[in-house]
Image (cartoon, rainbow, N blue to C red):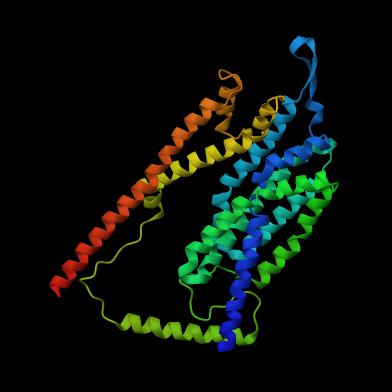
Amino acid sequence: MPGFVNNLKVQHCLTFATGLVECLVFAGAVFGWASLVFVLKTEGYFSSLCVNTTGVNATNVLDCSGQDEQFSLVFTIASFMFNFLTLPNGFLFDQFGTTVARLFGISLYTTGTLMVAFSTPALSNLMFPALSLLAVGDILFIMTNVQVGNLFGSHRSTIITLYNGAVDSSSALFFVIKLLHESGISFRSSFLFLSACSVIHLLRTFFLLPRDHIPYPLPDDYTYGITCGKSKTLSLEQTAANGNILKMTEETPRNNDVPVTQEKSFRECVMSRFFAWHLLWVSVMQLRHYLFIGTFNPTLQRLTEGEPSLVFTLLQYGCFALVNGPLDGDPLYVNISLTLLCLLGFIHPLSVYLHCRSLASQQAINASSVCCIA
């Protein structure tokens, strides 16, 4: 039995470590799009949209705003798919479990990397479905890895937070590809390597993750992955033990003085003020995030006295129109406005804090009442 427990600890640690690497390298790669744009421009993607125009002092200037618009549109669609398909992918994960969700995500991610690898300047439009497939695959990687925190009990929140930070850091993947491209390694080779890494994702799916879901709280001697007969026997013994515990619990008389909390329905959760404020908080944060990514490349070109471009995403289109119209290409006032708008995000955590404090006070009053009755 001690040896079995040690094996479980090793398996948990391997699951955590490989999940961290997966999130750090693959799960948020699409947000490094600004770095990949440099590579694609060097390769001549959408270069047919560049035209010669007359600039200051009647000099000929190459206007590539049409090219920049296409690159921005690629990111627009991919970022929209990343957010919009989160709900149906969550349903897929809930209904069919980890294995099915990951196999679907791996197939999308692999298809996306292969489409990028075999795309050419003549087939620039392949970037539209390719980046969208990568984005949807990223979602499923994130969803199936967050549950790993359930393996570590009281450290659950720490693991989940660490994984979320790793997802944000994975945007550096395309920056690494850019550096490799400048060193003479083609981006086709880089994306073929990413495609080959799907083998690692598959091995992790079958050996280091459950077929269904990781429960919380975690039962004793919980096993997952491809295991031997011994582990299965222990799981059956555990099931019997849990049945006895459940039976004992049912036979224990209920204290009618203790209030029973009824779970809220899905409709009640969606219509609650906490959901509304959280939705506003996420929307503002995402708007600011995507605007930064969308304007990163043009801002660098502007600072280097290059031609400004347009790298937009849904609501950001109005911001870009404002910058390039009345503001004459200067995003300062838009950034100030969005910074002020971001302050609305503080309402949500403040509301949660006040609610939790009120709830704690109410529970203390209820506990005192029960003690007095006793």
